[in-house]
Every structure is written in C-alpha cells, then in structure tokens.
Length: 182
Image (tube, rainbow, N blue to C red):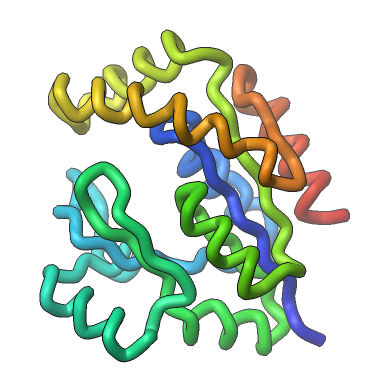
C-alpha cells in the first residue's frame, strides 16, 4: 500500500514549520520530505534535517538531471524537493509531508494530483510581521520583503483543498491532525 502526500504551504511566518514539527511528533507514519535550498542555514539548522543546503552549482546540476519534483525561486533563494525522496517514502507506505511555497505546491499537484494541499494563513499581515520580527532570524529588509510577498502568496490559498487560519496554534494543529488522519 502506498502512502499519501500532504502539501503544506503558506507565507513565511504563518506557522508552517511549527505546525509541521508538531504533526511529525504526533503522527509516526508521517515523514517530512526534506527540501533542498541554496540559502544559508539559520542558527540551529542542520543539513539533511531541516534542509539539504546546496551551493548554486550543485542545485543547477540537480535541475539539469531532473532530480526535483519541484523547484522554485523564493525570496531570492532556490528551494526544491527531490523526486526520489518523496516517491521512495510513499512506495514504502509512509505518508509524506511537504512544507513548500505555493508555487511548488502547484507544480507537485500537477504531477501528483492525489496530493492533499493545505494552506496555512496568518490571522492578518500585522500579526505576520510581528511573528517574523519575533523570530529574530532576518533583518528588517528581509522581513518587509516577506510581508509584501505574503499578499501575493495568500491570493493562492484557494488553490488548496483546505485553508486554515493559524490564530490559535493548538486549534490549528487539531484541524491538521483531523485532515492527516482522516
């Protein structure tokens, strides 16, 4: 029996990573597909755990070999999901969780239409800005660029099967658990 694919997307600061981490702790059959990125690791991030950190040349080589199920430019960096990682986990009967931007979600859904798409929304842009500032991982110009990009990203929420407003973490997590375990 093959596993299912769940795609979680939404703007930076909506709470995707925290929700995904909590899901993974509670759902033993669920495996995170670790994305590749050209961005530098943030404090505490580990290669192969949070992301596969690639230099631009290695990322270009992977594109040329058609290694990615999807890849996209996001906030000045590139992100991609290795096709082989996702398909191997699903073939082993594991459910796979992808945490990717809306562009990647659309690309994956076109290739794997059985994927369940979930879009995480912030309560509003002011809350989004506060969350990004509280994270203290990006400078002010990056935060402003992310907030501006959020409006465009949010306009794609209706492409997902489910849209969840993350205004209460525990309630949003409970909604996600119902979707994943249904």
